[in-house]
Image (cartoon, rainbow, N blue to C red; front, side, top):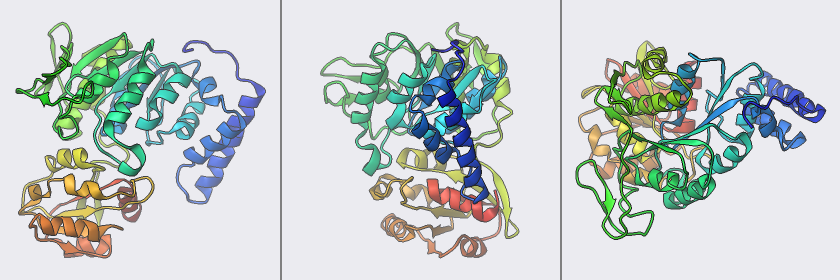
Length: 412
């Protein structure tokens, strides 16, 4: 469908106009950007609207449990070297938000779209993407997303026979299982720190063997594919063996992996690695993540961690003790209401840090920290937690809606 620029029908134009009006009303009422409600209204009027607004674009979809918002942002910046881009950069990643974002991209050449894991197959059917980037799969929102192998199976079914180029992480067995049904896969050795969701073979249920960085199933032979792109330290190695330096303003190994995948995707659109990586340097923060803000005369660095894999990566980013840390956890609809995942996080890595705990589910988190043998304080508000923290920069780690609460409070 990409490249087919048939004019929109009167019904589609009406749907877009109504969606923009609904979004404007939502913004005026102070209820956020309005992209989701605008998209819902537009899709109600024209259920085929997502396909219509995507038809003139070269689309790339990005999906994962962790890192999809950042990768979408890095990739959008890289592709701007070759033409105008429309993207759902603020993370509205279900069909309504995606429709709303693409409806505003009439002059764009590329659509760079973050997609919630549950909706990947459906959005791919509607947008006919040129490329699909798959980063990782791990436990998240257990009450909504279900078990990771089931999700990988749905992706596998949805990608079977796809014409899209699939750019996939060779180090995650669930991603490899999902992508292997596609006839055109570019494998990237992007690494996998969190392995607790990938010890059983997704193909047969056998026990995975993991010698070093390799992996394979000793029972059915399912194994790690040979990657043509690789993250090696601070460089991306391309299929020709050339190593390109990664210079990011975003911290951590995980973001280097996001950049490596983004470089591989950009190459599918004709953007050379050097050009793509140079453009990625311009990204300083992503929807507030990694921002350092002033609040109550203190510096707070805002970090998002939504699930065990995300918390593991985030713990590698924070300054060492005695840097104070504030942890905030909610369990609202957008977070998943099941907080059992807290018990999968190794909070002992915070030993030596002064810790304050806030958020709707601060008592759930307090029990977890108590069992981990950590010293901490439970606070009612962000203000109280900041005022009780020792001097120096504070690292603030929050899950999704807790992160949004913090951003509103600090005016970010």
